[in-house]
Image (cartoon, rainbow, N blue to C red):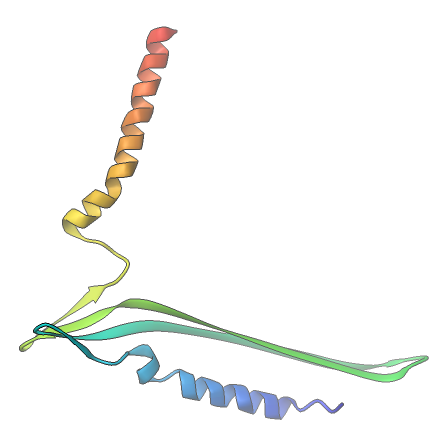
Length: 124
């Protein structure tokens, strides 16, 4: 088995060129009522490869190689236009009243813990 690292690296480079482009990072526009929306996505890629060869006293020459790759895609928000106005809406982060409602369970738990501590002190 011959190891062809140049060929492997060429294929990986071609893959990155094909995948890491504006079509991947900025999605296709869609309409939502009077708004035009464009999804914006964060793309991360990683890869590694390695190989080697050696001599065994009984079995002779040996070779080995391996490669691995990973791709991560995360939506980060939307470019939104309405008429001549444009804005960016982050995904995954809430604002205003919605953000306050998300904190309610933690607030209730905190109040319950404080009440339990007060009752424990009163019983002691």
